[in-house]
Amino acid sequence: MKKLVLVSALAIGLFSCQKEEVTPQPVTPVKNCGCDRIAKIVSYTIIGTPERPEPTNHATIYTVNDCTYLNDWHNWKGVGYKYSKKVGECY
Image (cartoon, rainbow, N blue to C red; front, side, top):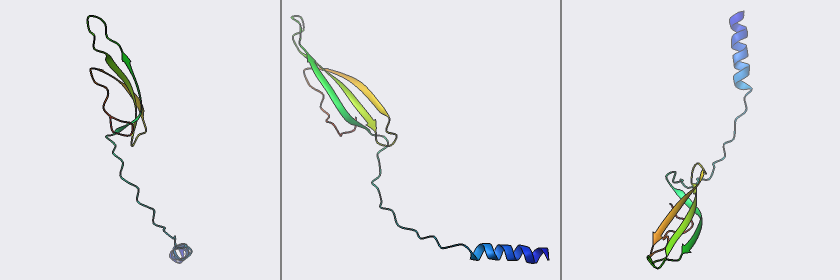
């Protein structure tokens, strides 16, 4: 009798389930987890002195990681040239 009740319960459980409809999801492009994408660049120039007449270019680069969305910032300094990367590129 116990086996009949168990088999009946299993049969009712299996036949009472409804079929789940699966809708395909659009494929999203693969993210580059090694890329800290440049979100903002703040740059300025300090004029030279009589001893060192070349101007010094400075930049603060704000980045956001493609996968973790971690925000970070970096300082950059160059004499005679400006920071070459643009917003949207990887740092």
